[in-house]
Length: 473
Image (cartoon, rainbow, N blue to C red; front, side):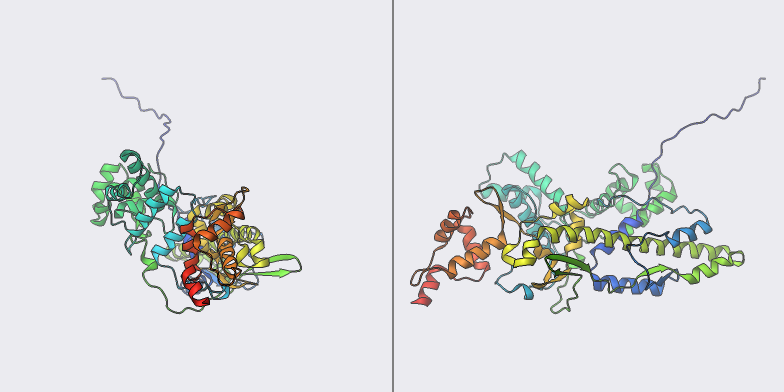
């Protein structure tokens, strides 16, 4: 009987491995915080994490070796030393002075509509988006079927073919769900909401994580790991990693907008001031500067006396501390780039006031800085800037534009200012109608429909021509 020969042959196997993007999740969370929220978060971390301590002498701009890196090298490699992603792809009812434009926190409806006003959607897409946003509940979920949206649009006289209209509705809904902040708003189900958030973290649609969320969200809730492992052909360890990512997501994207504070103390997040003919921008750094704890370094100096449990504990805390320090640095770098673009684009506003605001969209800033539109929205939401015009909300520096006859775009704030000037300069015993104002604007190369003039006039708190005339009489 012949014997069997055992030989070893190399075999290359391509296998997908789930990489936990804790770094990206933390970055997106930190970038959304204003100065007060960031200070509270970092103070909590200083209490909870012994590997962190305050460093009054550190500078975010200094280039030096990350002390957390050297400590982790001393402890040896870990399974969670994952690579850091290089890219994170990531109208008021009455006219008030800019100094007083510090509104309460926007509702989810208001926040989504503001982002819609900054898009380059066509008129049909804006109609669709308005219907979608108007039917999103407080948790962030869509409460109307796409077929019903199509019927409403057809009733309003849409000339689109039914199949083309449905395809457009699906495209607009996906763009709201995946690019508007909060990510997942406008979803029709929990799995659709979580998939949008997972993709926003950088995972591929073909990944086991996305497949688990799409097809096994109920099984995960029941902790039926065997069924998921069998159907996805993955191991138990990867299932636990999938579960860790999913539990970090927000099942109700509208949650941060549940309540609106009646009164709030506004702390500027940025300062813009003039020095001669130049504008200077400065961030509010009234939050702790952090570094890896010297106490941890002292303990590690006598590492021979540490138990395995203590070493694991230190490793975990140092990893978290290192991630926080890095994310704070990246947050400051990204926010500074966004602010520099905004300040550069709105130079005339800082020099001359709100009537000189230029058209600026989220996409304009995102393309320049190299980040996702939703990240720009996170950065500019609920943050304030103190400048020669007073303390204003950062998102007020974004404005849609109207194309003028000479090819240039004019911001809505500029048009509103022109309408107010026209009304203020109208002759005695004569009040311009909305049609008259529209013609006067047209003579100045700005084409605005009569209905649009009426809308802006009401926004400015200007009475109709008949009421203005009766007052004068």
